[in-house]
Amino acid sequence: MVLRHALLSASQSEAMKAMATNNPFASGVVSRFVAGETVEDAVRVAGELSAAGLHCTIDHLGEDITDEDRANKNADTYIRLLAELGEADLTDRAEVSVKLGSIGQALPDNGAAIALENARRICAAAAELDTTVTIDAEDHTTIDDTLAAVAVLREEYPATGAVLQAYLKRTMDDAKKLSTQGSRVRLCKGAYAEHSDVAYQSRQDIDLAFVRALKVLMHGKGYPMIATHDPRLVDISAALAVRTSRERSSYEYQMLYGVRPEEQRRLASLGERVRVYVPFGSQWYAYLVRRMAEKPANLGLFIKALSSKY
Ligand SMILES: Cc1cc2nc3c(=O)[nH]c(=O)nc-3n(C[C@H](O)[C@H](O)[C@H](O)COP(=O)(O)OP(=O)(O)OC[C@H]3O[C@@H](n4cnc5c(N)ncnc54)[C@H](O)[C@@H]3O)c2cc1C
Image (cartoon, rainbow, N blue to C red; front, side, top):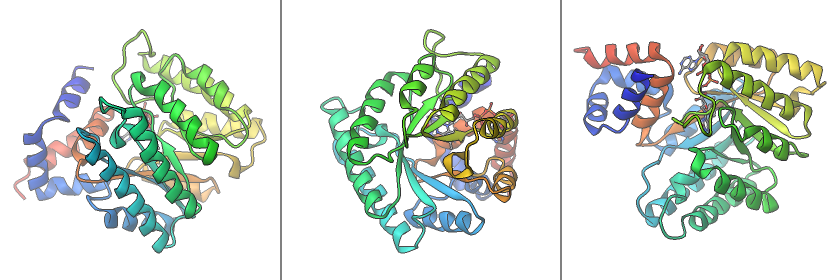
């Protein structure tokens, strides 16, 4: 827990980012988890994944929003990305994931409305190309606004995906409400440091909550998107898919770019739909450090790379 908090603080450090950026060895580690800094990098990785039989959802890393102009520019980047994916004929396998925070939600004046309008522009661009948008889940204070925005977006773009975090105590209720016909819902454990008032804390409690919400989604009428690298939860999902007689086209697995890539390919080779979450953008550093906080073995790799003279 102490290491996790230290790492989450390091994710804010510009000096650490500069060290990582200037070290050619470290950049090899970065490229394992992040597609690169540009739209072109993201499209290239989407093409590679598609060639390997995988789907993807692409996240533009742009978390530090201080003004409306930056929020609008982040949305513009998504629209350009979608156009490039269309040009490359990849929109049958590639969609985008959007954090409302990156397109204005936290702005003091009218943040929710600015984010909704930007999300609407992105959804319109995606719908033109026959692909979809999933709205990521951020910290618990944003969930009401985010799910409300998803509900509004679905009036015009019904395929807009929602995300539920199993560690939040409210999630069972949200899962029941979102298990409707055609409703695309990603279930993940949850990545933010949350208080015990609102979130389960122990790994066991979070895993049990994941299974409870998963059962609701798999028995429901929606399209569950099972986002975990946890081998036990993947096995339980497979068993539930059999028990609920789900066609393989009626749910999917999702994993992060660079995390358990062999498992991603194994599941795809069994005929499962597997979607890889691909982040790109100049703000890759904070994202990468969060992945270190999840898995200390990745930290070892990163530190070794940073201290290398080569
Ligand atoms: C596609 C996708 C989308 C997501 N979207 C969101 C979101 O919108 N909001 C949000 O809060 N969170 C999101 N997350 C993050 C999620 O909440 C978890 O923080 C993260 O996935 C780790 O949880 P886990 O289920 O993999 O289980 P964990 O308990 O973290 O890990 C289980 C096992 O998976 C393997 N593993 C896990 N992480 C790594 C790693 N980095 N490297 C190598 N092996 C690893 C290990 O074997 C580990 O024992 C998303 C995750 C995925 C996969």
